[in-house]
Image: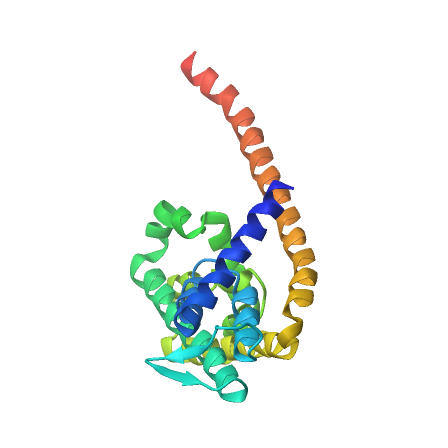
Length: 231
């Protein structure tokens, strides 16, 4: 499956980047994931495995200080992910707040936020109210599409940041803990994780097919009106 192959190559790119740049890569990738999906599950799991010393010559280093393999390295990785994601979330909130809905309706495609996704996000916030941010941070895929709509809907910054920090901490510490526990069994764990990649690939293919179907159906409905207007 081509999509699965692409995802496999992407996962290799992510893990090699973390292997080369450690904490800095985890911080940056999680910052991006706050606005655009960046495989945060894989990022944190692999970061946890690095902290456990599962790979030779891959260390947890911050500003020249090398963390010993074990608890301190795990804590550093989990905090790097949590802080990076929280900062990225505040940036996404600011984009939504100052850009507003009209701006996003025009340019939201660059953030994978079309009008329908904004409508779904608004319904999500209406349904869960104050807990929408916290629950969103713990929901795969959805978690990357909470920040900007939260700004559009003018979620209070302090409460928004606190709920984001709590949710992202749970996410990062849990997935980093899974990688840390896997340790030297990373290859077996990663092999099992590929089934998740195949599932994601199937969802992407189905989603693309659905988008094409809706586009074709909409064009067919518009064509008679356009022909009538031209006539």
